[in-house]
Image (cartoon, one colour):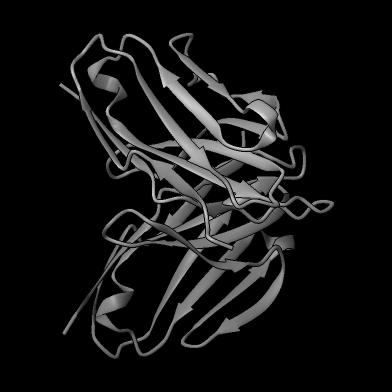
Length: 110
Length: 115
């Protein structure tokens, strides 16, 4: 089956710093989403981005489908950005089965 | 749009007992998914419904697990004869599929602890 890898697994940032999270996937995908899981366990949709670039405030994401990777940029990080960031893909062979990566755990310290 | 809701939020049970969780999707969403998440891992797919039909089940869904979605609205996930290994967060998601677009919205989860 498809493999989804994320890097780095853990990241500690000083408040105000920028960071880039990476997601690699081993097969063609129909769509890709980035989620943020807060300390209470709630998964929040950040981006639906099967290809191209999108921006939402301090966050932006780029997916290069042909090279099978996606990047999530966090600028001017805040303590509320702490949590786990997941990349999730849906394979082209299945419209419905979402495969999550292992996540990047981010801690933003004041 | 009130979001996806799940009930209960927490459940503590003794090994061998049966438990049932409920998920109410976003009202116009025709697809509903169940996932399980253990500590330090990403969510793992369990099963998926389109309307009331259960179209896909993971091999993770042993015969002690059963899911239903009567009338294509809310869904229930039942675990019979719970084991300590069933302790996890059980997440529900829903989506309104349009062509190949499958954008899922997640509920807050039910955290199960089996003693």
